[in-house]
Amino acid sequence: MWYYNDGKAQHGPISGDLLVALIQSRQITPLTFVWREGMAEWAPAGHTELALQFNALPRTKSPKDIPRQPANPTVPIPSKNLGPRFGYKNGAGTGMLHIILATVFVVIMGFWVGLWAVPGLVVTLGWIIKNTDWDAP
Image (cartoon, rainbow, N blue to C red; front, side):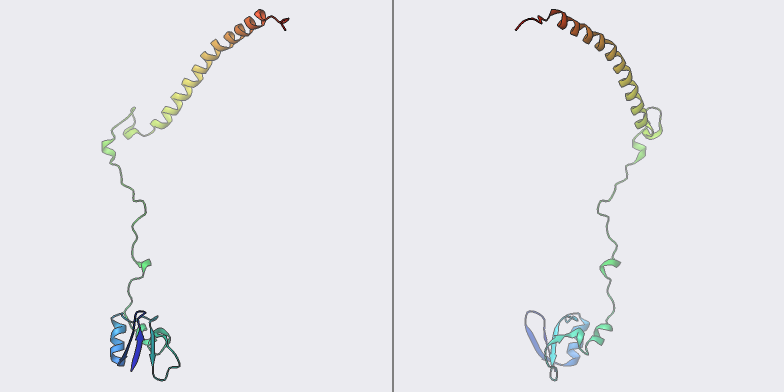
């Protein structure tokens, strides 16, 4: 006759056949404490002669055997709705075109601003130097 403790209550005495049936239905696991006459103390079922019963159980799928869903599934964007841009199919290559055009614009604008700003700065500083009363306290 066997006794077992499922963590909530102690059960028994039960026959060995009933205990095997509980193991096969997975109500008793290798970690469930069991005891029978002749044992010094309670022990996990997997550390007793019942371990053979657990080894005979059909294996279930482990978590690593179950396919995982990706954390951030990507949704493909249909390319047929994008349409051509700037003469490129589906907008390919427009990023580089924009960078080149922006660079040319900045260079040309910088040249023209510099062309006007430097003489204006020289004239302004000349006026300040000429019209400042350097002898004033």
